[in-house]
Length: 161
Image 1 (spheres, rainbow, N blue to C red):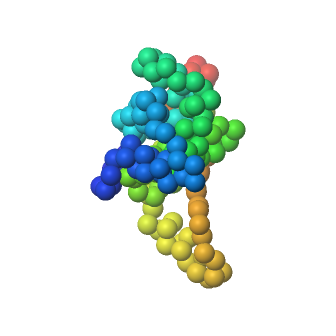
Image 2 (tube, rainbow, N blue to C red):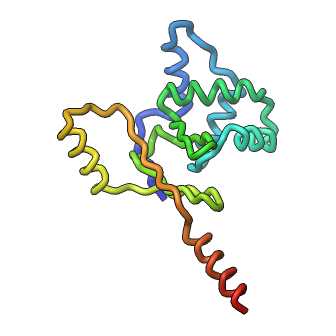
């Protein structure tokens, strides 16, 4: 589990600042406020539909269109990162968390975050060798998690009986 980094302002105030800096200043609405509070109350990967369900359970009245628009704005504001895990688009906290990569289980969908200084050094070396200035990079390793591997082994043993 990644540990959060200290940040100079709350996600809510950073989003307010982003909305105020837009060419056409935008209002910060109560539904957006509730959405940000829910998203930043815990650190987990989520997709838009999962978020809509959680907001519904929390009795937050917000349209799906507003959820999708606000997610896009949160990415633009640097608060969330949008990741493509196969056909699924998921979001995670970008603000207040260190740079990291992901292992994604193709069986159960589990997402494991990890950091590797060695990978960071290799990436920097490759970019330097090719005189390349990176603006974004994401490493996603797909495979099978330990729990799913264990479950497979149990099923195979039972098939032998």
